[in-house]
Image 1 (spheres, rainbow, N blue to C red):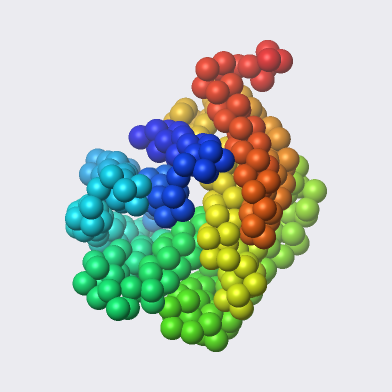
Image 2 (cartoon, one colour):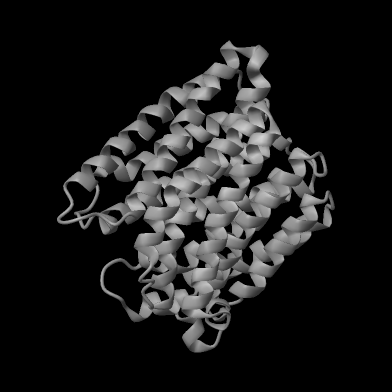
Length: 377
């Protein structure tokens, strides 16, 4: 299931980039295709993977493992609506389907944390906060339909709660667990940092979201809080591991780029609030500078584990060796491409596509030619 979610997310990203290059995909259809069909199910799958680790509990129930598929179907309804193939009823159907899944995950997460032997890892609270942001964001969808005069404000809340709240909080919480695993070096300050920074990050998300809806002055302190949390994490990594080690592994280089990309979208968003950058350009840039490094970096580490579960094997190590190749170069292409998109230059699509093609080549080698790295292929 997790392997499928990772591959389907890559397929969605690839299709979106190609269709945007061909100028045949509307902006809202493109963004919802990526967020609702690729990112949302993949994040739920990742949460189901990490929560048993954070709470030292057993495997999730089968219903939990299958929930991302239901969310993906809901996401397809949303995409088809914005692509002009389905009416407004599709959005309501998607919300009616997704909200119970989201609330069910909230309940499952709390239950797992309560039944942990000892104290659960504080990373679970980041997932809880992210899911609550998503719940509010989903609830705003029918509100936009029944309260059209406030549609613009509610849309701003919906976008920022989903992107910065759900995706952003999940990413920052997961990175602090995943990166030490990649580098085989524990981050002894991670637990304390996760506890201290969560209130700041949540406050930042809420202020930015409210500012996007009701007035930019609220966004500035919110962006400042998020920038502070991101910079503190980045500096902690640099002190703990050093830049050479971080960029020396393809997976960690991509995740470091994702953290930097999150910082960039906060800067781009602030520029948009002052009218310096266009809203569409800022959102597209987010896909390139943040989501693609995040997804490719995480999959470089997790896909081999999902493909070869259980004890560490030579096959898993070989697959990982293939996927991490060129990670730093891919990250540079994504950051460069997204930065160009942020200022309205379509050349950014080509750099983004180049980075994505590099990773897809690695995926094909890893799945279709196992052992290729060992054999020098």
